[in-house]
Amino acid sequence: MSRSKSSKRWLQEHFSDVHVKRSRERGYRSRASRKLLEIQHRDRLIRPHMTIVDLGAAPGGWSQVAAESTGAGGRVIAVDQLSMAPIPGVEFVQGDFGDEAVLGRVLELLRKETADLVISDMAPNMSGVKSIDQPRAMSLAELARDFAVRILAPRGSLLVKVFQGAGSEDYRASLKFWFGAVKIRKPDSSRARSNEMYLLASDFRGQNENSAAFDG
Image 1 (cartoon, rainbow, N blue to C red):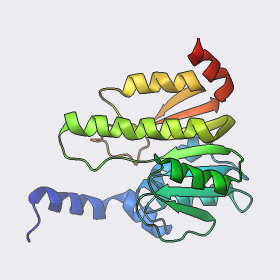
Image 2 (image 1 turned 45 degrees about the vertical axis):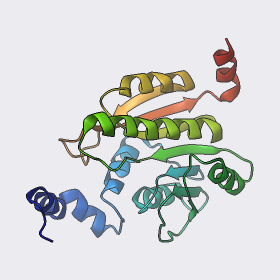
Image 3 (image 1 turned 90 degrees about the vertical axis):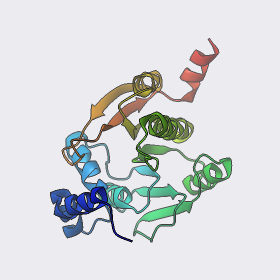
C-alpha cells in the first residue's frame, strides 16, 4: 500500500528533526524525551531520591529521563496499557491506570507510601476532528489529575500534557484548587504547529484540606 502525501511529509519531517536525532544519539526511546529534558533543565522538577509515577509511559522516553534524573536512590513506576521493554531502574505496571485494580498495583509498589511527582505525556489517538479529539485529550488529563491527587505526597507535583482548546482553562483552574502553583510550559522541542502545552502543578496541598473545601 502506498503512503499518502501527508504520511510521507510526516516521515520526512520526523527523520530530519533535530530533536529526533538528539534523542537517538543519547539512547532515548522517543522524541518526547527532549520535552521532559527541557522542562527539567528549566524547573528542576525531578530531584535525587524522588518517587515518580509516569502515566502512559510507553515506549519509555520520559521514564528514561526520570530514572536518570532521580538516580539510584529514587524510584520510577511506569504505567501503560501497552507493553514496554524493560528500563533499568523503572518498575512497570501494564494496564489502564483508570482502573482500580491498576491503581491498587501501583499502591502496592509504593508500599503504602506516596509519590513525589506524577508525569503524563499522554494523548489520544488523533482522528483529526477537533470536536472529537479535544474531549478525549481533556479526559486523559482529568484522569491524570485525579490519579495524582490520590497518590501524591503533600508538596508533590504533577506535570501533564494538555491541548489548548475547549476545557483547557477550566482544567487549569482545577489544578489551582489542588496545587499552590500552576505554570505553563511549551518546550522548544514541541512542534510549533501543535497546540499541546504542559502544565506544571506544584506544591500539592494534600487531600484533607481540599476534601474539606469540597464539603463546604
